[in-house]
Length: 237
Image (cartoon, rainbow, N blue to C red):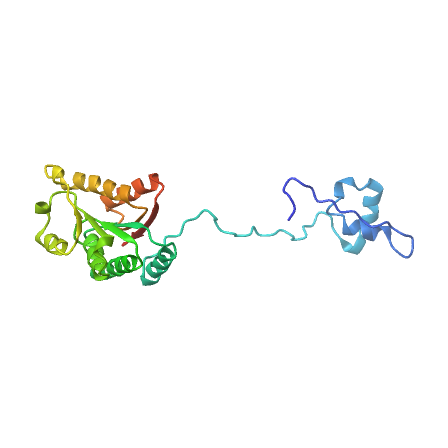
């Protein structure tokens, strides 16, 4: 490919006198060296092959559509994409993973989260999450299925008494539970941000399931990126 700053230079072969008309060679290169052809030579080229110098030859080319290399294409989340992500995660060896996500998680998405958590713990990774319903509860259920309680840690934003009855019942089977009773007087969203920051400080890779309106979860993902953590953010909408 030629550089943009380099001009195209064509050099014609020497013209011999053996039955070769000089005007033919000039005509072939007429559109390239038109400005440098002497006036006498221009007169010789007139009328060759009924060629009209003012007539356009129709050599215009349409601009190639190569697309935008910077464009980011949003990929919908499905079973295949999650399994691909899981395969990439498993190939990296045991690490500390944090799963956080929205409470408003459909049954299908909960199954995906549960399968992911189960596979992570089964592969020897340590899983961290919080105690909210939806995504986090599914992560706890999946990790418990692997029967390696030492590889699951649940951090609660407030005391155990502030959790819902369903969460308390689920957490009875969890060995490592960290509570934050000092946050009981705070609004839940503020306590959740503190809890999420603690979880990120303990882990290497964040996996989030969120909607575009999941403010607290998305803030955790942004914080993880600032900490140079690996972040896998899966949108449910």
